[in-house]
Amino acid sequence: MRGERPTHPELLEYLANQLIENGWDLKHIHKLILTSAAYQQNSDFDEARAKIDRENNLWWRKPGRRLEAEVIRDSLLAVSGELDQAMFGPGTLKEDSKRRSIYFTVKRSKLIPMMVIFDAPEALTVMAERPTTTIAPQALAMMNSPQVREWARGFAKRIEGKANLEVVIREGYLTAVSRPPTERELADSVGFVREQMKTYGGPTAREQALTDFCQVLMCLNEMVYIE
Image 1 (cartoon, helix red, strand yellow):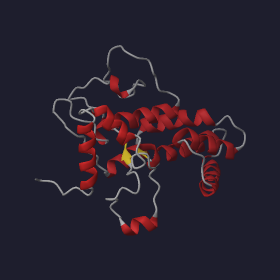
Image 2 (image 1 turned 90 degrees about the vertical axis):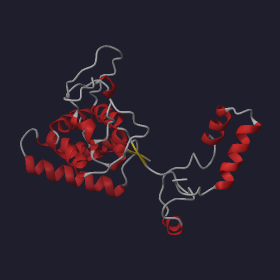
Image 3 (image 1 turned 180 degrees about the horizontal axis):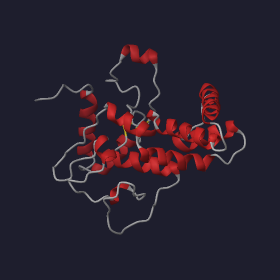
Image 4 (image 1 turned 45 degrees about the vertical axis):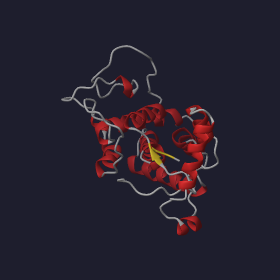
């Protein structure tokens, strides 16, 4: 009554019939949906299709989905090589904890800023669905947070052992976003690291420049959106 009319009423009718014909078995419906070609699409953008259906009402691509606050923080810790995967035990209120975010103790007067910025839910309120906001403080936190900077430094230490800078850049992309860089990304990244090394100078120039590069990777949309 309050929402929009369905874009695919025939599909809804088909799924309803499948549910009835298979004895109201939800597992059958889940399998039917999850193994469908529509569900298994990637999120590649096609300008020709977008001209026809910019809002993706016809489901010609998988819409991007942002990760939850807990997963974003855990992913940053994971690429830094510092994630503590120990299970069980007491929770904590320490923001610099290296354990998975699920082990944070929830206290309304001591919320974790990184979690709040990325829409972590209010634990004392029933929430049927999490909001997903895109606000400036999210990007600013990724660029300016001392904690993120520390994780970027750990990330740089993971990949700096290779002598060839191009190999280091490729390793960084594979670690952060699970794909190799494009030729342009590789060239831009090598140029960026070299320029930063000139800026810093001294014996730690390479380490600091790679830390800058790793922080750039952590700020990519691909780190927080499922493609």
